[in-house]
Amino acid sequence: MKIGDTTAGYLQYLLDTAESLGADPDLVLQDVGLDKTLLKDEEARIDLAYLMRIGFCAIQRIQQPALGLIAGANSSITRFGMAGLAAMTAPTLKDALGIITQYEDLFGRCYRGSSTLVTDGSETWLKFYSIAPYNDYTYFVVDAILSGWTSSIQWLTGKSDLVESACIEFSPPAYQQAYQQAFSCPVHFNQQENAIKLAAGALNVPILHRNDSLHRTLLEQCDIALGRVALANSYRNKVLKVLGTMLHGKTPSIEEVALALGMPTWTLRRKLKDENTSYQNLVDEMRRDVALSYMKNTELSFGEISYLLGFSTPGAFQRAFKRWAGTTPGEYRKSLFNKHS
Image (tube, rainbow, N blue to C red; front, side, top):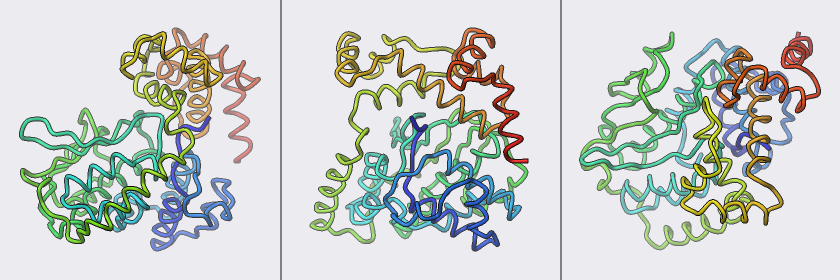
């Protein structure tokens, strides 16, 4: 199981941005161990782990930690593929942002959650789910998403004053000054979520390239494409998405997950059985894949990983890891170090 995936087209765009800043894309791909022929098909799905590695390695090579901000600020709405085209022909900004969130799985899926457009009273927020814990492999992801949304809103409407502020979960990084250039609005760190706040009335602003007939056709194509994303509608995938938002410091019960999905527990058990799996198998599978990803892509301690995955004790994590990988966490991380040294 992958922790999620994105399109080859987006990875290529990130590489192109890094190249414009002085990186050799072939060397970056060599660093991460990804065959560049896999990027030829823009719609091909690539594991999100490669996105994190490409961003990290590119930043190391060009010594530009603001790569995510730069990539987002200079990106086109077409980076969202078919959903982007549907958004640029929508009637209003509300319609356009609704499309980008509704069809997010077409250009990027992650077990941690989904982006949402939320109106709470007089305030409207476009929210990106948490991908904590944060480190040099994940800062740029939040940067690219939020700055990309901001530039897309300006491109779609022709207005630069529709984003009032940006909120970011992690602490101010060393390149904090770059955020003002990317957002042109207040940026608040150490917040409870990653989001941009829209100005009053922003949702009613018309889209510059509105085309009703083309828009309807594009929405139909988006629905067809979404149906082709094999796991998008499986209960296995739905459970994994919910698990990703709950698996922090504790292991959620199947009752909690069923409640989040709005169905009886017995129904969820039956649906998973129909797909030849079980809730406990999915918990174990997710823990295994996330643990391996943390080991490969972060410097988190074994105790921190154990806590994040909801194990009762570090010893329980150590035993589970040996069952998954056939070796201890310490030996596994040592082998990774030796492989890349």
